[in-house]
Image (tube, rainbow, N blue to C red; front, top):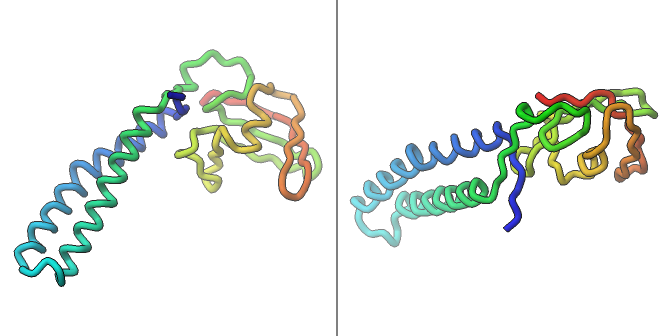
Length: 158
């Protein structure tokens, strides 16, 4: 089975969610189901059906998170030697040659990606194009509106 890369922060966030689901959500849902059963006829008991549905979602998410953690390879970029190369977990500042704008992205795992937070997946077109490159390299990236040329200004192992 292929291991999926994940940052230390991403693993911590998943473990936190898993802990919350197991220690807070699961016991509350079990209590809700027990309370709803006391109300009688289960066929027409909306509270019971809602609690059972929530239980299904919670248990499904628990299994999903446990699977992701089992298949993950946690990479702590701070512990790696700084080489100036773009690798998984690095924070990269790119300079758009045409518009002269800069943008900074952190390369993370699929589950951690959030463009609003400037975190992009290692499988994204931008990340695929810059991984393995070094500071000062120019990279042409194919986007829906055409080709964009970026210069890698800075690579940070933070």
